[in-house]
Length: 196
Ligand SMILES: [Zn+2]
Ligand SMILES: [Zn+2]
Image 1 (tube, rainbow, N blue to C red):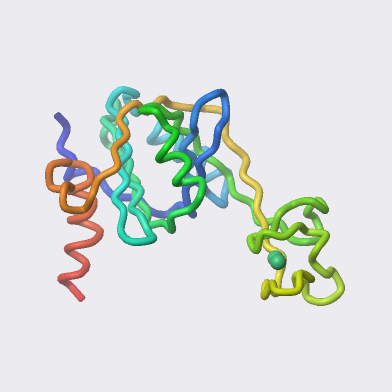
Image 2 (image 1 turned 90 degrees about the horizontal axis):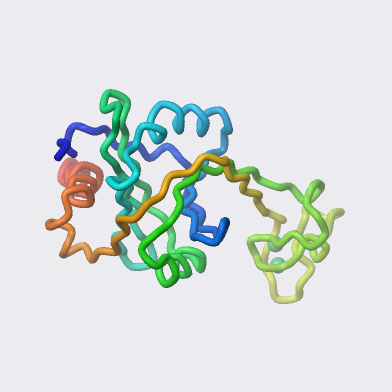
């Protein structure tokens, strides 16, 4: 077993998307910069040994910890990933539907402004682009909606993928029995709390 504690933690990605693609759920850590995602794949994830890839989810009210790590054929450039994220419908769908397997892919996230969005692109308020007024600061025209500015995004998935077969949803009280999740919370949560 590799020594989990020597692998640095990495959280400089913008989020995680969950998408059906190729008949299987995809777990997609998102980057705003394509080059960054390509080099991260090349330097780190490419060397991961598929059967050893683990993802852990630890829920905390309406948030959750996304935790991912693996043994590597190139331990010197290995990283473990984590991010504290808001629960979302896609997250819940993944939790119910993953069936013990998923593809890991990286994604590039692009913000869409009202000018270049298609008319039926959906804003984060839930209403379409055509319901937003292009003349007046992009406000949503729906009566009861208080959205002041159209915001939407597009995700492009990189082609390369790895297969994940070790997926667990944990309660925080059970984290002690899981080396990856335990190390993550120790380094990124508990030790920071005690320093503040
Ligand atoms: Zn809106
Ligand atoms: Zn709206």
